[in-house]
Length: 338
Image (tube, rainbow, N blue to C red; front, side):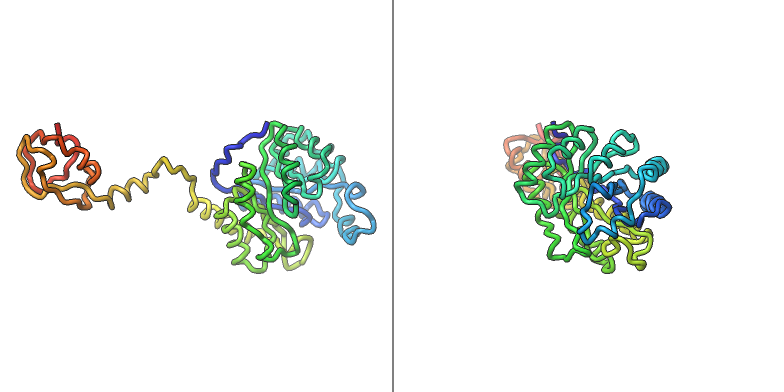
């Protein structure tokens, strides 16, 4: 049974996406984990795959991916090291052997299913059966494919977050399609995030586009990190350097604060204060004697230093009478009637 179907927004979570930025070097991977921690990211995500299970030798990424593959013992070292940082660990798994390697690791707090595996029902079942939160990449997926996996995952007692966004090294603004975020929220009644892959060299847009995504309804932002973008390593196109990522997180916290958590039935203290300062209340134009009918009294509606009775409320009290003498200029309130 799916959790969180009410789809309440309680701030924005930031996923620091390491992906392949480690380049097959465990020491660099650990530095990136620390950078995610220093940036105060909510989550940090790694991608685990076994090369022989992932890619065919005629694929043009064959050589590149072979060089960044880590061994099982190296991944276990990373699992152990991850216990020293605060961000919660998400593992994006690309094959059954990788899932088997980490499925029982307590440090793993969530899993991500990549778009490429949406139609692999056995794999989706295996991930969801673990019972941890599941992020589902839906960038480039058809609505029928999303319907199918959402129905399948909903059969399990897991929290589901859909992640919209594609990686085009870098992704053009016009391919971001932020309106899909709200459409997905409305259709599936669950949290929807945005996996941002805009050109990181355009720092202003690298901060603005995720902010726009949050304004469009995204509750999660996934952003790539790298040790040094100028080195042009894996995924560098859309990756921020550690200092940039830290500033990005700070910026997104401000965006989240500005958007707030909306409840139309409840006013915030700031709204109440503004309301009391700006609303107009009934003020007596003349002295009033005890026993005078409300409908016979002349008032003006002015901004006052303390709340009183609005025009609508005053008219509802037309048949009441004043219980005591009142001087001109008094702010009228309910205690004046009987």
